[in-house]
Image (cartoon, rainbow, N blue to C red; front, side, top):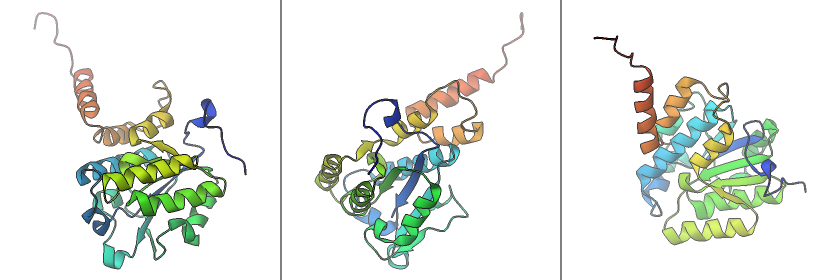
Length: 220
């Protein structure tokens, strides 16, 4: 089993090495989400999805029993309007061969996962994929559990297995890496992404306003 180091430059994410799997951001799962404010999770997972799209990171969407649990939340589906989520019966996403095949088809070994709930639908595939040689990163603030304890215990369990906890803005920073690298993401994608970054996004929009406001002519 060959895995990347947990320290050093190679421990960081790159767009070329990464794939993203988003699991079960559906109404039924949100109905018993108590580790986070549901609105925060919606904001963060949509921001994460836009990050992946902007940097060209392959993204797999999956749902569980969507005919009962509801379709993927619309703001997330809207990021990938033409992509139909893989609808599973397996609780553990990694036991659905279609999902595994979709990830393996990307050729990427750094697997970023976010989902509902952390203690079940995130932990199960994260642990299995890590055991099969993937470097697994779990986006903790785009995931959530039925209680703060459930989420926390799941993260602790995954960390013990060598899985890396990370937040969605940290993912974005590692994919960008250098502010001088202007070709990584389009200005339109950058603006869409910044809409989800709270005060940073507000300040960025203000900066764009100032940069695009002509200086008054002398004596005007």
